[in-house]
Length: 183
Image 1 (cartoon, rainbow, N blue to C red):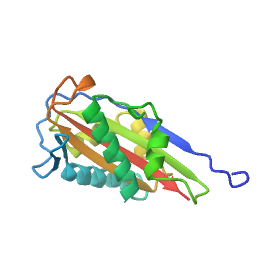
Image 2: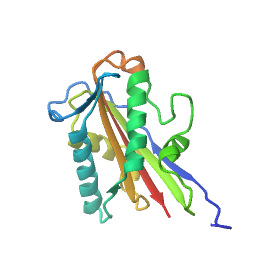
Image 3: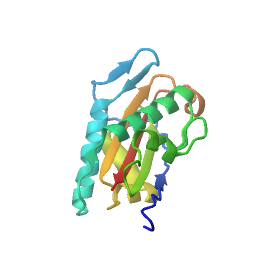
Image 4: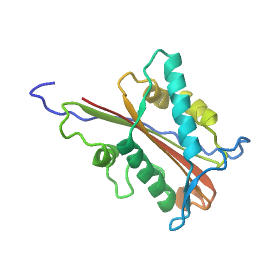
């Protein structure tokens, strides 16, 4: 890096998945928000993190640490997509993924900062194994999961009983994983 200048990098992978019938449930425990009708699926988040780190270990990579700021960014994005009925790395107002995640996981005080993101939407019965299987068979998602660069991860899984827009009023589960590194 020249002159200590921060050069943000973004690695984005997008996968639109509409899996209509999976037979394995994510579990009964979830946190609900009565004002939005969304439920956060904490067990699925925990299982996705465990699966990601197991896959990384099997490829000789270090595990990712769960980051509160990256998880806040992921939670905000999953919830916004479910409420407003869109599916994109960009924010509803058109802001970039890097700016959105940077609001929570800032670069201030760091010479190097980089973030990436994997998204998924599916039927409510998606489980961690199915989610990771889909991502591992998608080149961009696989690259994010197996990147030596990442040190931290934030996760969010939300369920909506009737999501508008691109979800067609269907029940959906939306998973956002935000990857990051700051040095």
